[in-house]
Length: 397
Image (cartoon, rainbow, N blue to C red):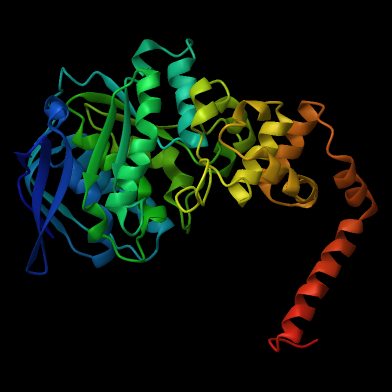
């Protein structure tokens, strides 16, 4: 895989960073696009392209040849420990060599910004609570810029959905008084169905931060898992090793770090309530882009988990404008039975939070739980479901 020297050029009000990529004799550009007002933040190094294309090259088993400049600290990590970690997590990857024309260690004096991604979800709001709302954080770690990018998380028809999601959050960023950078890219086109977004999101998103390292000195990446869940081994999600991987994506200019792993999921949900803007914009729904009405459907598994946690924490009333609490009430008793009986770690966290807050679970839920009648209820439901299939000729006893 050969990567050309990056080019910067303007197209209307957009600034494009582009490299030409040669793979098996075929040429394809890799590009990032953002508002040209951020020109002074964009680095002309090849760091962004190297991190973006590392996994596709490792999947193919192809060495990388780079014509441009690469930060020596990043090159050191990629040629050493980083590839070992990636191969341990994703055994289908192969170690490769990286050849660079010029290694540099120059420090940008303009790299003062502190950047975090903002999706309107629990993780990103938790970062804001700790690094923007909370006055205890050192000034050097206080967020100065929010980022929303398109590197594969928006699925099919990514352009339209990307624009829709950005528009939904833009006014919230304005209320917070923070610049909200919108970065588009064709990066996803270099990845296969094996290296889809979920396993590779850390490198994809961090490539955007590296693109901006001339103006950004710290990149705070919202953690998915707590410290207790961190491990290196076969996995479907790179996030399990974010606390290990992100420092290896740092340069002399950009400190990349995972933040929020000290919290459980229940703790994070409670922490989010410290940001009043979340009361009208928290988006946790897996159906938020497919249903009509308020942001959250209030009945999917992510909505129910969030609503139950907020109720246990005594904060549910704050979110009445973005959840349909009448819909939640229909599922509430059954969901709390699930919470009480599940072996899932995230469900157990809600039970622990309930003990800490002296929360009383619904009487009906507790009666069914203590008498084990929920098992009979589940048995009857399964029986009726099977009976329906038999009647329709789709099953038998």
